[in-house]
Length: 532
Image 1 (cartoon, rainbow, N blue to C red):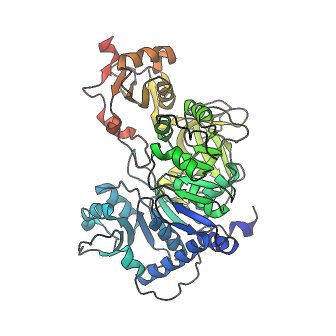
Image 2 (cartoon, rainbow, N blue to C red):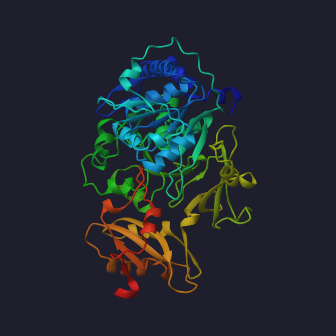
Image 3 (tube, one colour):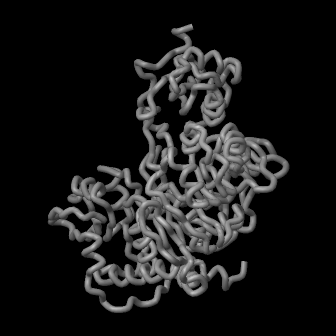
């Protein structure tokens, strides 16, 4: 990588380049909303930078963004960077202590939110240590907060400008974003993301999904998530493609949008594939221009189903906010069950022993460990958590906490979160593998598998499965099919059938296993030892 090229890896420089090269090209189009050319985005970013400066925002300040997918999100993100600020991406579901933790840890002096976020803010405003000003995306009249200065977005846009803002000075190694881990197993950590790290999410999409400036990317994931914002939207800004944004994922509208807007690329996450698969067949299923779907993760059953039903390859990849996307499945050489090969232009990836950190031989399960080849192309640490940063980077490799293996051809396979690897009577069990098997049963729609304490000395744990069905299969039938499809040690002893709305989720539709573990064996849980 040429040094000069990497030094241009900042958001303001990307916008300036695209405004000069393709000013009238459509950059972003919101379904049921406005559209923006590259020139308009560039001008908007400069306007927002000036307005931020007018309300006291300075270089290095943090702008919290607790917003759904909306035009204001993009304007404020780009304007924040134009003003040399740091965007803090906040999950829109944050409430109470979780919201306090995120705002205080990130030291946000400024926050943008909608009316829902304002209600949540009202409940905790007296416990916030740094927040001073709030920009509210709402047409409603605003309450009076003694401790905070509130203004509507319209008022913010009408603020008297201090003049033309100074040109941005941030470099590719400077902090661009704080993005919080999901926090499903403990207090969230704020990942420090330099400009080059953000850029590399997009560049990885361009290189590995063959994104061209003539393509259209369908984005239905939250923009506060690295997948939606950097892998998808930023990739479009970098390459000159058009981003088509839906405010929220809708399984019933997915193929309609794909066909109507001539979409060529899109991403799916977790249960989104399952929700789409449940939709009735449509004449649009193959009447589209979709080239590829990126998925993380994707069960083999859905890769096969989507290939048959929609005629589109589903490409698996692996990544996390801290390490970018270091693994992509080659589009021309997919390998079922694998999450890809190393994106070795920018990353080193290996499987190491969880105790010694020594490299393991092929097809041996260990921890997936990653390190960057490019300065700024990786997280620079956990904000205000030096001990956690050192722990994650011990022995000069980032420890993902994920179990995996690598075959002799360099294809990696995700096995499970290490803490989700169950141990039952001396046997290690992957909850991911059990879930994949359960999802192959007719009538099973969703499954979450985890360990509960065993009542047998030396048994370590028992396997429990929380399952959503279509009503055509009961717990006993699931157990009987499991006997045919799984090793005896992996068969769930405890099976709990729940409705879809009983599954606790993050805003990105991931099932919160920590919450299910806390619930444990409930009164409505079926126990194989008592029912057979």
